Length: 369
Image 1 (cartoon, rainbow, N blue to C red):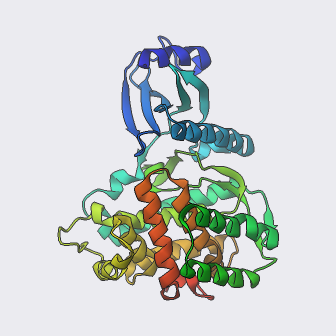
Image 2 (cartoon, rainbow, N blue to C red):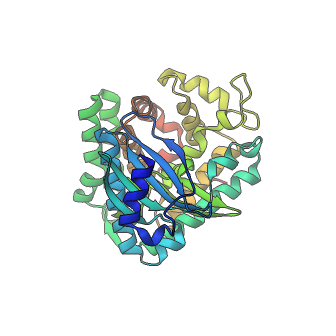
Image 3 (spheres, rainbow, N blue to C red):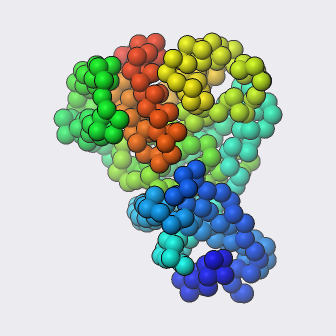
């Protein structure tokens, strides 16, 4: 398969490969959890330098759909961003098509190491200064990305509410069913939205899955972002604003294991986890609850990240009550892995029941003191 891939790339994108074409070997970087999804192979040139990242569908529809979506998203984003796309560290599509009966998307290699590399270093997420640096790096990149892809504003009205919020809940109901607590949540979300009707919502580029594993860093700055299958142009900004801090808080137990369920450096996390265990045993559930419902230095920084991004866009904190629940509902449907789907379903269930205890639901939510 690798030889066929090299030959295909030599025909489709010879300018990216050099001579001889990609004879420096290859490594498998990883694959999606779902066995029907995709796998990524890094190909090296004859000098031993990374040359091409090739994503291959494993043969099923999930991987092929994701690759097609990423290819289209990157084409649209680069067309909108122009030369800024390279400066932001977006991969550039090199070739797209079938190799050996499998769909393949070949992209340029983005410099840097995944943020997870430092995140999982011993003691990193227990040190407030290190966490501050991570959050600031991503906030700086995100603001550049929004500025370079800015497409103006769209008012929140009945039509955009239906498109961005109500339709997400309807799809969620069709997928998972609907109960009285979620019906009550949607009713309250509609009520909160009425107070914001006519508010200009900035639209522009969106990554859609700005998780820590998709962020690459080099020194003290974000050097690039990968996996753009949920990328969009002309989208509201909330998915990126919420996804990054959610993912940053979700894996603290794996980054700072204590063996007893208590994560060193994060007082209060265990206690809120005990309370939220009524909503299931998905490990990420505790991280979510601690980040957005907890007390202490770490939840304060998560709140400040979200509030700071909203302030940069001129948006009030009260808008969280409209868009954050819709974001959670969307997360439950966007991933193919059944564990994640069920996990996010329970997260939304927990949020619906516990929302009054989070700053996300406060009408005057602002930057944490």
